[in-house]
Image (cartoon, rainbow over all chains, first blue to last red; front, side, top):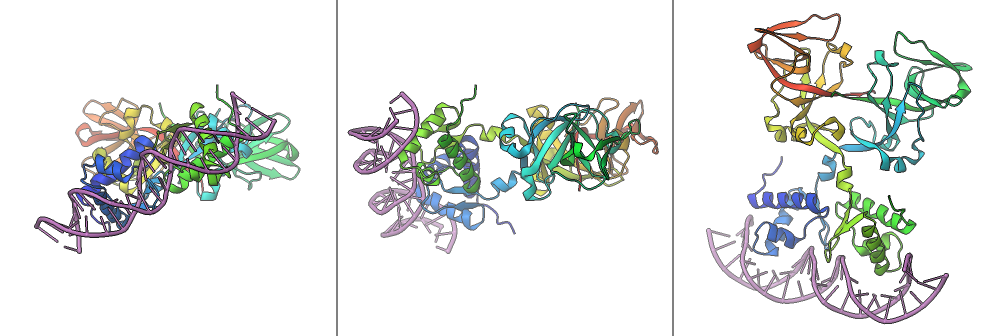
Length: 215
Length: 215
DNA sequence: CTACTGTATATATATACAGTAG
DNA sequence: CTACTGTATATATATACAGTAG
């Protein structure tokens, strides 16, 4: 049951949101007073209390600008993940996400929280540009972005970013351990599997999502 | 040329960002002092001035908590778009985005700004769940999300959400106008084109992106 | 009761100032 | 110079209080 907002309270909510967008910090009671043409600070305080009771705001006692719009952050449902380069077609992968924080500065993108299944996962997510069509039968094509969860091992058949140590190349394939060696299986009927020594393969991440953009 | 941050300044930046995330409003000089184990408020002020000079912060004079992290809002590169239901496999499409605002309350998701080519486009974007495999050869499969830009017409061959007026069904197909009638072409070799009277077809949007999530 | 006016005030807070150490 | 310590202070700001109108 969402309580209906009185016009004055609605004006105040609007003002607070706009103020936040413009300044990056919340308004004071007085800012609201002048911004909404209210006669005195008490009226603002009175209405703020109503908004808190209604669950629209949170307030910290005796804290200047201690106003928080409930659900504002919750509404920002995106997660920023680093884009760590390109994969497949023999291009080398740059550094990996131990230091995701620094990578963030360079290139990053926003994905929906839905893509990040668990909250704990967020820090382990990164994205790669796909070069080449070796996974075309898995409906991933040249130019797509794949979202991966960083991990060092994988279940047989999982789609992974594999790092070939000797070749210093990264590649997007399905992972099949076969004793001493590993089969890296493309999903493209025109291409055949790659067999490599198990010690020469490092799993870097498992594909959890795909993003494609049409021009 | 990005100036290198001193460790203390780095700690302050971190603290401010964390404080903002936790409280929704910026910290006071004193909050920073205690949070970063700094001996006095003057040292905080001194370092904040350095951060402003370096372009990392903006400060409003004589404003309590008047600290703004430069680029924080700009860094939030996501766009929230409404999810307006499902498409294809004969399921009807719910209301359409004249009133995107109201739809937003119900179901929405976050996409990267890269998906929204121009800023003006943002308001016209919406998403649909894909049901069925009629576009499998276009590398779009059952369960994917398609991002569309709302528009009433389309170029021949474009992938669109088409509304069949009589049938009251929405379908995801390639659009080919052929005089009096329209050919709606699936991208699935096992399926054949649908021919409908031109007056019975309304274009609702053009596909601009695809999102897929693996379990 | 609700929705205000108008004023007063304690304190939260930015900031100035005088030093000190390397 | 830079990077602090330690203290003082003006003011920005939340909030209490005494009323008033319907």
